[in-house]
Image 1 (tube, one colour):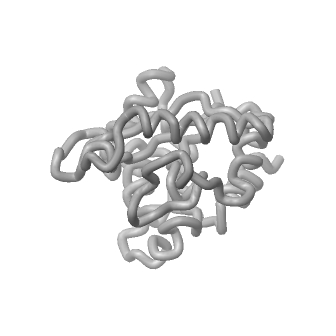
Image 2: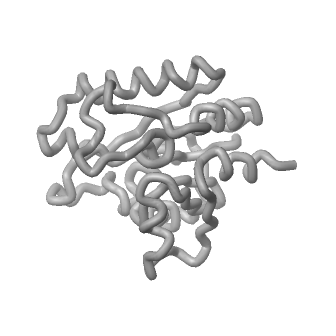
Length: 178
C-alpha cells in the first residue's frame, strides 16, 4: 500500500497564527488540491494528521472542525482528489497527550488502523513537530516551505534526513516521478 501523510494547516491550506476557526477561513494553497488528486491517481492513500488545539482551547467546537474538514474534502473532490482519512489531535500542549505532534501517537494510530509499517512513508509538514513525529516512526520527513516552513528550514533541530520542497505540489511531483 502506498501511503502519504499530510499535515493540514500550512501544507494543504493557508495557516494562521490565530488558527483556522471556521470553514470561511479555510483557503487552499494554490496547487495543493491538484497535488492530492495526483497522489490519488498514482495510487497513494492520502491521510491527514493534524494538531487542532483550537478545539482544546475552546476556540471552536467539533462541529466547526467537521465543517472545515467537509469543505476541504469537497474542494479536493472538485479536482478529482480524495482523503482516505483525517486524524487529528484536539488537545493543547498542556494536556501532554500522546497524539499531539511532535509525539508520534497520531502516526502510530494511522499505522495501526491501516496495519502498515510507516518506515519510509512520506510525512509532509511545515513545522518541526511534523518532522519530529515522522522521524519517531522512521517515516520520511518532508518539509514544505509554505506555512511555517520558511521559518522551520532554518531551525538547527531540523532532522538531517528531511527533504525540502517549495510546496506540496513540488513534493508530490518528486514523489510520483518515475
